[in-house]
Image (tube, rainbow, N blue to C red; front, side, top):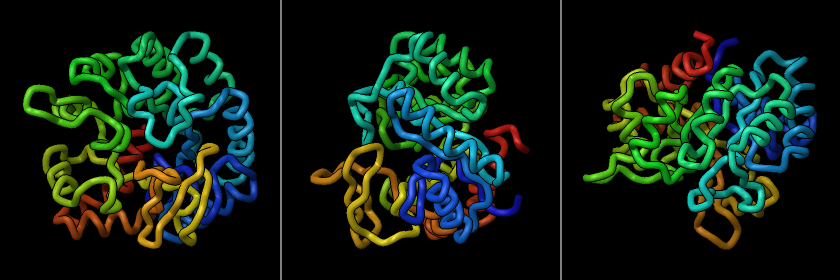
Length: 292
């Protein structure tokens, strides 16, 4: 299917993926109008019963729309200190029972999961998930570079929204992003909306990891919609006139209002060659999923 491929998007056009069948169709249509032909629908941390309900909705739309590729679970195996816009009450540890419950709830639709590799049981969980064909991403994490490397050796192949919700690169501790930059097996998501990551860091990332940068929108329902009050995973979100989405009453970013065509243009304005930016929105995410 022609167009961009977005492997991390929660919704758009005023709707969340997995909310309702009609809303999921509308969110897909909103992003298609901006050039995205294929989407992995992202779900925030939630109880297993809610995951199963949302997956049922997504599966119904998948049956009629080949552009909806499956589900990305952003959680619940996240570090509480790096939870971002996730409900802290929905977080969980990656025990064998919890992993099995999510695999059952998704019933073959789980394409991707984001998790913190420093949590107890995480490395065993990574091996189990990879064995089931799931792309494991390191994110929302306090892990060190060594802990990230252990996750990569266990089969994790992706960093969720690089620079955000993780330790920064410092002189004595490279953190998960530094570890990923050193490892040619690992792809790196980035949200190129001019809000989550400074443009100079975007350009640096493309130079440091050629062919491994994946543009994602991390879009919530307000993407391609009007500013105002929204809800993400049960949490209130305010979207300002300039497109910034934050948890109500805070400055914590709650996804984005980005569309993929704009992500490409933000990268080009930052000095990234257009061909590289387009590849990061199309052929590179396809490689992450094993589609190219």
